[in-house]
Image (tube, rainbow, N blue to C red):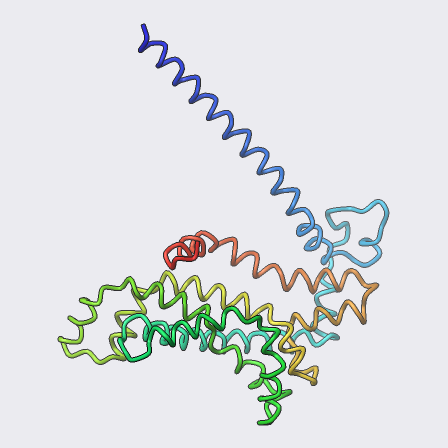
Length: 285
């Protein structure tokens, strides 16, 4: 008798749990759609003519579908130049990611004098806001003639303490015995790193590649400070110019914002599971 009652109670709790899951899913789904509505509005408005954007009452779906706003940005607002500059920064950011991987591997697998102290020093730089170091870095670059150059834009971002930390944490989990066995087989240190360590580190490389792309794609403050020539501006800087020169043209602003935000959202949405999982692997919970 008691077992029958317990079984019935278990079934009731199971139904209640299933109902709560459904209710939670519905509530979260509605909330997600609510928060995505401004993004959909921005993207759809970028394909509307200006008179339709300011129409009262507003419409969500464009009555007249047009690419005029995007064409104007790239033909008259130098967004093609801004895009090339941004892609150059992203490219060199990936070069910097490779350098960070080398540094992380060194801290993880090489036992040299002062390793721990040097690693603590690297971590200590993470406590200093980047805004604090901008003026000293600017003065250094200005003294060697690298202001208002693409080199001056990409050089300070080649190496980052956070990326070194992530690579070091992950590469510390690689068995040292595996590397020693490879050395006994006659492999050079370069071959060990390129053919053994990097393939094993694909998960953290994928995460860091995503973060590197997002940081390079959204680069704004440093290019704005270091570059006086508009031909060196990035997409983010160009987008900020729209707020001043074309503050009343909502179509151009929507098109510029949609072009900037959409690749990042798509990329992050697709790889967000890998980012969370590998942060946990690296000890970043």
